[in-house]
Image (cartoon, rainbow, N blue to C red; front, side, top):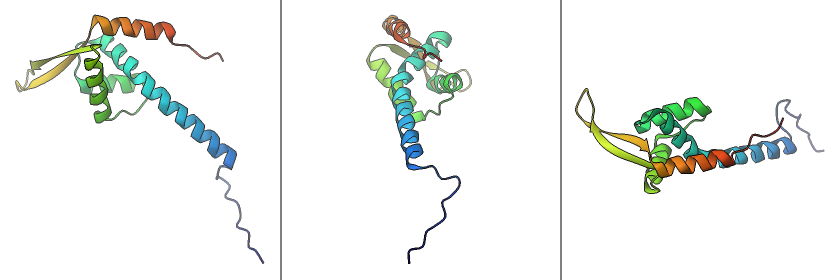
Length: 123
């Protein structure tokens, strides 16, 4: 005789699990695509900034959790694309070199094009 286990009340069914996966996948793709424009917009509004401050402001603006590694990689890529520029400056307290990030004119043009193409979903 086969024993049946009672269903757990809070366990999502297969359809719910699939839907959750689809939404999570889309959100992950969206975050990857929008991180660069978010960084550029933050820098545009508050430049010059250090990477840590860019991360703080980006997280505050989006509610996303960003890793230090991911931020440094993205900022470095944006510098390589010449959307951001950086310079090393001595910090006031210790005199240690710190990196200040600014938006380039090319980065501003790119950001303007992204903004012109961004859509708001109807409700």
